Image (cartoon, rainbow, N blue to C red; front, side):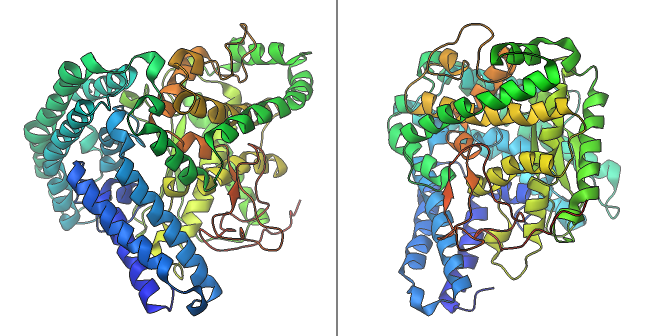
Length: 562
């Protein structure tokens, strides 16, 4: 921990302010002390939080670097970056103009993703969970009111986002199981009575509020929603400035949206030779269009059952864990489990996401994977996906960072707050897995290449929608003009492409960071200023441990022992 008194105080203030503003995120990160709270979505609360965090940001900037050690200077730089990004997000409030069901871009989506993951270790935690459920009624009502205010100011939601949000609410209201009954109960509480209390609160408080939110979306917002040719933030008052701010936040660079857009096209072009080589080797194809068409349309490259998906990702994780100590220091970290994503969220979710372990060890890390409709899922992608989400990707990186108790808490518990770092490592891990010999066949290596193309498409599509004003239809083609059949730039099927575009429409600029990789400076294991990330391509990254940058702490990779 930092020894500078003022810096240490600001570090603690920021960690508390950030997670009291968004306690759902604290739950997802495994941070204790916030699991009984809900966010306050109204504008006044957001303004007050922005002012509070802005005060911390200005105070951190004002500290004389000459008073700080080298490590403390990094603490300060990271604090300034994170607090500035959090303040800007609260000031712009872009989510209010993008009603959706996304877990990273919509308050209701975050509630459904985060609340059920709380660790209930004792009776006090159970009571806190019940208080949180009771507060969800007011939370959902406030979300609806915020949407109304935004629409009245011309910040109208998209029609596709409203439909997505309505489908999510309807799914949870009619679902065969209640997502809020998911947490395991501790042994010191009466199970049947506690489950009944949860059910009563959901029936009497939570579901009526969800129904009111659905009515507001259907009756008040759907009639004024933006059409599919106006899905980007550039069509929203204040949207262009907000988009520029989130591009800077998520890439940690000063690249303009236009530059990011061009990088995406460059990377897609650079992948051509590799598609030709690997396609010929694995599929016997002679050109890129036929390779991509084969990958999209060959039924032999689709899963036959949900069990097959689980088997692939489980075995991939097992192989990676067995090889981990040959390539990295022997980190003492929580286990990683495989969990299936709730079928209700199938239309809203990415193929997978990672959930960090809890700080107290009561909850393992989890690679949460989409298994519904297995006949639509590509067999060759799920190993690369596993290496990205679990080991050597997000799990190794995020779980190991939690153990670095000499660092300030805001540097130990990170995920989407520093997407360029987190997604940069996850992306690099897909290629690192190839160096480690983890892919089970040449076909699976095509998944690695497919995801490279996907990340490049993200750079093109996200900036296309939000900066250039592309329509939703044009965005699904991932290119400057709709290509001829069979020549799109990635292996995405039509249904998957529409799903991805829905997410990028909502989580603006977060998709950009998934195409950026952290790059160490020439004379240090860390980037030169702690935010020295560059969106070089979807295929470059650090040959270091997952902690070798200024967001956490440097480490060195052991030489391969084969």
